[in-house]
Length: 128
Image (cartoon, rainbow, N blue to C red):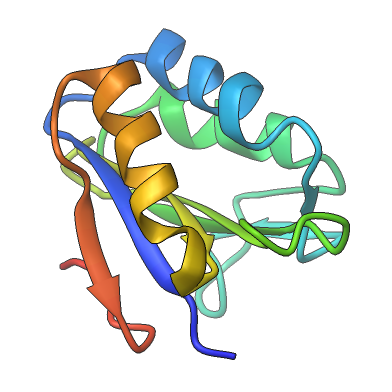
């Protein structure tokens, strides 16, 4: 099933906002990967860990570090995916992948929580 991705865009990272998002939206999720390396996929490894919170803290510590975290929740068919994309300019996209039948429900929750409409992406397209 294709999911609808709903993202909150943050133009300047605020660690509290990111950790609040994790607590509010991803607390029952598991990271898709068990191990994290920075930089991901290429170059000399600068940092590695089996704990995504440690990697997130490392990435947030210094501007110029970007990383994409993916999460899954096999027990929630309404919102089975989660994403945290930290960009090198220290902007971020915080998102959930939702069942299309629940799109309006979760859009309303985003609006109630953040007072903005989420960015909506279909067919796996992610924001740049």
